[in-house]
Image (cartoon, rainbow, N blue to C red; front, side):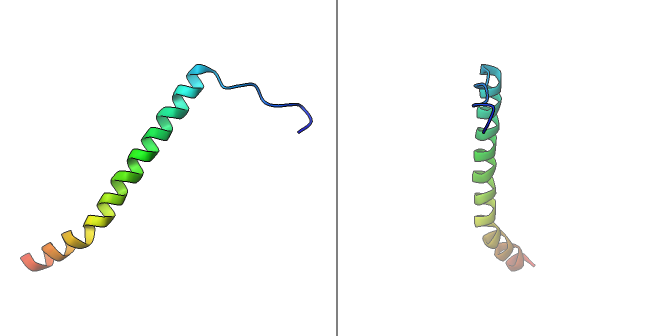
Length: 49
């Protein structure tokens, strides 16, 4: 607020942030698929036993 804007991030910092963002998006997609399929897997396991 009083010191002005922070310096822009370096290229290495930008690459690290992009990698972290891609990893987060991939993990969210995988988790969503697992949570969507888990009721079907539980139902299938119950039918086996």
